Amino acid sequence: MLTTRRKPASVGEILVEEFMRPLGLTQAALAEAMGVQRNHVNELCNNRRTVTAPTALILARVFGNSADFWLNVQRRTDLWQAMHDPEEVKRITRAKPLADAA
Image (tube, rainbow, N blue to C red):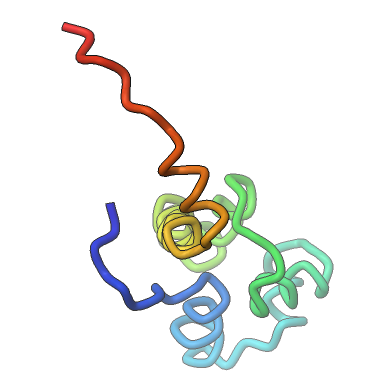
């Protein structure tokens, strides 16, 4: 469970700040390397698209890291958003724990 109140870095932030800028990559160049449309990369960079398993595998292949890295970045963002969205918090608190199944 996330214990920080600070919003984690998003996929877009990490993609741009930690990978694209240091490598001098444009969105068009990354899209070409990934074999996807430029709008796919643009949506990732601007946090309008989430990382799916296939996208994580592609990013891992392009940057030489793991799909788990990209999925974990997405997971942290998703969990933080769920824990800080008032409607989601209401849904979560309505859930009732099951009795110990031992």
